[in-house]
Length: 90
Image 1 (cartoon, rainbow, N blue to C red):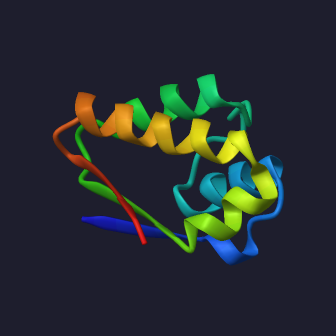
Image 2 (image 1 turned 90 degrees about the vertical axis):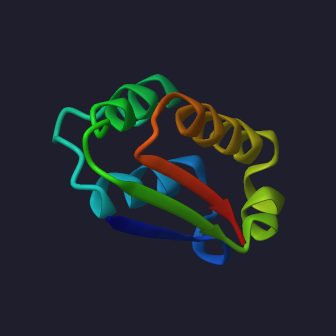
């Protein structure tokens, strides 16, 4: 199982979060860096166990505002769709 921990205290922009996920999850070079592309790419992990843990989510929320919630909601929706995916807020 792969575990990726998002360092909320170091994520200041939406682009930083996309770049972090792309790097940590080895997303393809054509990854679009938007929520639709994130959904599609995470769904491609359907056969691989994956946990995303978002440490210090509140810090990201201060910087990203409602965009942080959109990411959180997306991760929660992926968790509902994929049995091999889990999402944790810390």
